[in-house]
Amino acid sequence: MATPPFVLDLRAGVGHHLLWLSGVTAVVLRGPAGRAEVLLVRRADSGAWTPVTGIIDPGEQPAVAAAREVLEEASVVAVPERLAWVNTLAPMEYENGDRAQYLDLTFRFRWVSGEPTPGDDENTEAAFFALDALPPVSQEMRTRIERALRPDGPADFEF
Image 1 (spheres, one colour):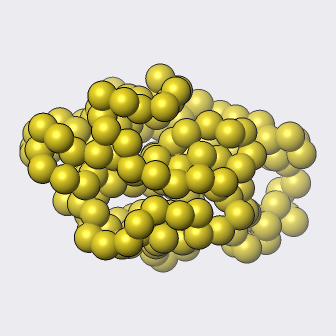
Image 2 (cartoon, rainbow, N blue to C red; image 1 turned 90 degrees about the vertical axis):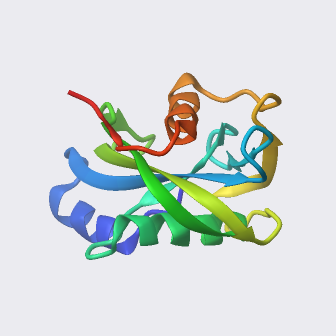
Image 3 (tube, rainbow, N blue to C red; image 1 turned 60 degrees about the vertical axis):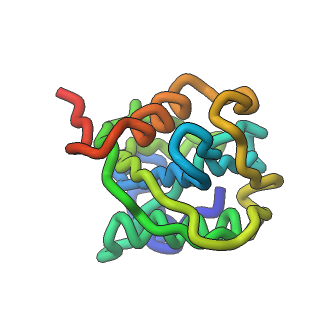
């Protein structure tokens, strides 16, 4: 995963200490309800299939960040329909020793245009999948997809 410049600047001052960062997940749907497909990307670092995820830049609106990440990572234009879930992820440690914890904002997006293809070096594949024919997806990512698929209504919050 490419590290945003502002995170590199923070790391220069705090080293490997835990950083609290805001992230987004974009669950992009294409097609009619009941037959919708979901956009997934295969991460270059782990080989895992996930919805598009990313870090919010300082001062960036979360939905704008998610739309930017979808375009950068999958070459797809999509628009946000609703905030689906607000969730704090468990602290994690990267191979280089950096530690981070993320507040994840999961959005449901509607596909507008573009055929999925990896748009940067963060992913090796990008494709739409029928909801009943997903490739292996972690339970964490499956939960994000399920939350985004819920009918319109308020976002889910963890307590």
